[in-house]
Length: 480
Ligand SMILES: Cc1ncc(C[n+]2csc(CCOP(=O)(O)OP(=O)(O)O)c2C)c(N)n1
Ligand SMILES: [Mg+2]
Picture (cartoon, rainbow, N blue to C red):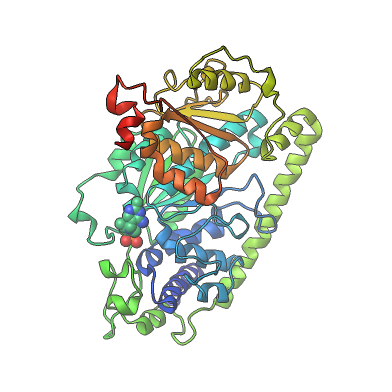
């Protein structure tokens, strides 16, 4: 039986992924090969963006969590024309546009820097909140979806607990997460470390969960369609995928599902690169190529996407004509400019504590800096972000009219969420907690710095004198 064009496209992604890693003599082929079917269906049928205007504000976003699966992302973006075969050949090389783990590059379709597991999908939660915030203010003509891709590592990372809880609590039905569940991780099969029923866990948090064969494109398509029309809950599509799909040994036996293909070239892992590429329909001598039919399929999709975006932009123009004031506001929101603000007009009391002074400023921002979102990890009345909260309301399911996010006690989640808000754009995210708990946020603060995100941190209780509460307050106990 001849292969369908759909399978051929996914095989093309597998071939490119395996070949990039082989050429670089390092990287992660196995996961990328397993996730190829999903990523192909998503990009060729579901993800809305404008290939002629990649920074279009109303595009759907795709947030990758397992950055080690970068070959999969670069490959599908190469099918879309954003990376050349030379770019793929330079994978992981100094100065190349294809670093080992993706670094935010919106114009090429990379929405977030990823690698530290768990952060990518948590950023997606922040982007999904932002989409709801903006849609509520400007109208559903600007609705779009936030897709994210998680793997076993991201599900195991503790931050997924906070991200999953918040997304379920807020009923982020615009969030669609694919879990590449291949039962293999870096050192072992997953059953060496967990007996968790992940579907039940996400259901308990208020998600809609569907489990499918993650290499079956018909099932992927069906699950994505259902997720797109979901109106109440975020969707988790658990795709049971095959690590290293298509991999063969020297003697032509299957080399699928092997832990060794997680993080080294196929030939080092124990497979035959030549046999694998040939099995997938490629040319082992010249594997970095795109099949003509696949090229044609993506070119056709490109034309459709440009036409769909043009229709959406026309709709926006019509809305703008009817809503000049809102249009001006929308433009300010996305301008990345700090709104005019007269700091001299802020009235501070003499000798007030810095957190009280901060609260006064935040209270003055409320209502004036309309795209500011303030979050706190269950400390709003202590870190004094409540100065802002008192003038607005906290987000709840179906109601994003306020501007405050009560994150609960989950500082790392909060820091990832505000990163996702900043990446989405249109809002100015601020988050607060005690200075001493900034340690819990550090991995996301680091990524914010790497991505140069304009996120604001309100860290309070950093004085030596607030010692009565010992380890939860004093900076003294942090540096001792
Ligand atoms: C926070 C963090 N800890 C550890 C790692 C190192 N690491 C990279 S991938 C991985 C596990 C991979 O398992 P999975 O996510 O299932 O990917 P697959 O093996 O299926 O490709 C680990 C531990 C990391 N990238 N981030
Ligand atoms: Mg895995």
